[in-house]
Image (tube, rainbow, N blue to C red; front, side, top):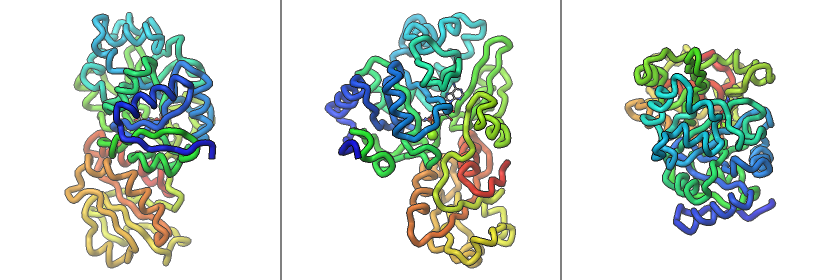
Length: 370
Ligand code: TXA
Ligand code: MG
């Protein structure tokens, strides 16, 4: 225990205190609309190293840099403003296809979209794990924006969980995992989106947009907006290569894992019969907790006799499922009466549907969606 960790509501005093700590090179837990982040001054290499220490995150996994919405008001445009700050490389502001990036920014910022672009000189290598690119995002949560306005520097922030564990969507989750290691967590309430931002990598010529991580903002929405085909998320096999450091890091496939075995189905429970679920031998007869994207059918209750059931959304609405997904996974993981977790997946009808499937697949032991 290095510190007594305090959780504060996002009052103006708490915002000022967070800004002071960040200016002094400390790390602070902050709310965003997606998940809680563990923030530090993105221009200060030592402060950023502390994020990696606290999270026990390997140095090869780069961080997202969070930028102020004041860039959106800049008369020269957000790309020129971000390059002036040294966050992105100056050439981006003169790219042939810059108008398409500015369309994305105008439509989705502040919000859950991260752009991977060539990095600027003010971002130390530790932030990007030595990559020539930087992931940038303008978060929509008011408290986060107030802290950015008070610090006047961008904030590097990964999700505020220990490496490889479930992302936090409540201030209490940050406290339980990182309490004693940081001084302050700003409590901005439950995260409204509930899963991390969509990450896209952008290359100018030939203009290429590639989804590195699915999130609320869907590939087809982006395609329609900018009129360019979008390359979908690489599969799990590809992220395994990334883990070995052979390819640029994007995502690691053991992210979001509960400590208990999580077995995932290929389809929603509503489109299955219980005999279609393959329960590994070592889990047979053990007490199961069920995480269901919609209402759980009687046949599943009767067959599995679960000690606990969490129904995420009565109508299987992706927004509702996403909001409670990580909270509910934590609840089942922490419940002493539950030995293992059985979960189903929503249909991949929207950006969020895909994002939920992606997070559950990464967290699961059987990874059926490969
Ligand atoms: O919604 C979010 O994006 C949240 C909130 C806190 O903003 N942040 C978040 O950060 O999810 P983190 O560190 O948990 O996940 C960031 C992912 C990592 O998997 C990392 O590999 C990828 O973004 N990433 C960051 N910079 C990158 C880059 N330059 N190239 C490729 N991938 C990058
Ligand atoms: Mg994370």
